[in-house]
Image 1 (cartoon, rainbow, N blue to C red):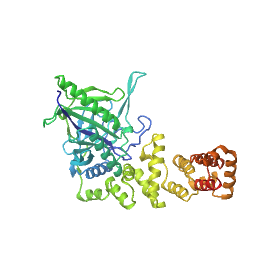
Image 2: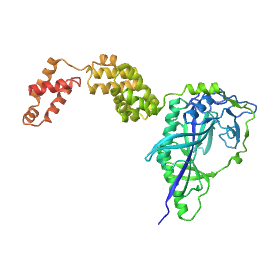
Image 3: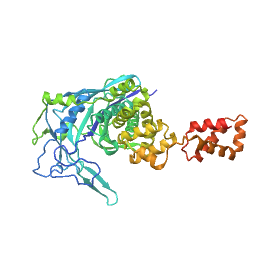
Length: 476
């Protein structure tokens, strides 16, 4: 009988902050520029260049701390973390070890056994390193310093998670909270949210921690879940075989579904931390802290409750819409214009989600304006266009944010409600399809569906389906 093990997991989550410029210089933080386009003597570590702290970084870090129930360290400072690596041009990183800006917080997640608090040990500010790009063709590595000096916060949890599900719930909670604050877009695929997983296993019932490993290179929730499963099984196999788990940093290869050792795990003393001599300490006054507190938005949980009460949305709708800040904004703006909350919610949850998925987009990238969605809903609701045409027009709204009123007018897409024209078309369809007419009269209810379809075809999809049905039944 093999032993029962439990997994113990803590996370280090790095989040790139949404400032326009870097943490210690004026270079742009925009993603996707040509390599080394956003650089200067400060972020490329030139001798004699001096850092100047970006105030917005402190505000975002404190705002995330407040939202995650942390104590804010009102007197905090930066430290120098020394290490040599090609993507680290100064040969040190400016970070916070001794007095991080936020400490002792928590977020609450929903688990299958009810709500659970995941404690946050600390959140500290630091600068990002550059990026090494390995060129297989020339068998060399090139370095892009655009990311060097982009502001980060590192959110370090306590080892409170016990499964991949809890880890993903914790990450989703952090992601929506930070997106609602506007502190980061948290796009894992662009590296603006990255998680390192510290994992160990121990026998169920033991209160002693096992030896942990740290896994890097995780850039999606699904990769994180797979990596946790893989590492748990690897450690269990080692212990079952009577071997020891080595404390080390491992790299997860999602394509191969396996991890491999990168380096033995360093401890703080290996980095020879000392107070950063080029930056003065940060003093966050009570007044400044109150100002940051006053700007806290309505977060997802409160929004969800309000949607269910104020807009009478089902919990399912409210849950999906509030999961993404942009979607919630579009929902509220559209509803304010057309005052049809359930219809707005349906368009967002069904057609919008479908087109986002087809275009490989994130719900925070909804491309159209609330005004045009409201116009479309009003057109469909008034019966000016039928549901088939409405979906076609919506695809145009999604692609090019066109004005639905003008588009429907210009393309002649209005529903034909002219009874005379419909009657004539239906009489022709009845004449052309004697077999279906016969089937219907012999009690085959389905046959009428075919006749409705033929009529819609004849009317180029612009007939009012209700009227078509009514006239067909009358004539048959």
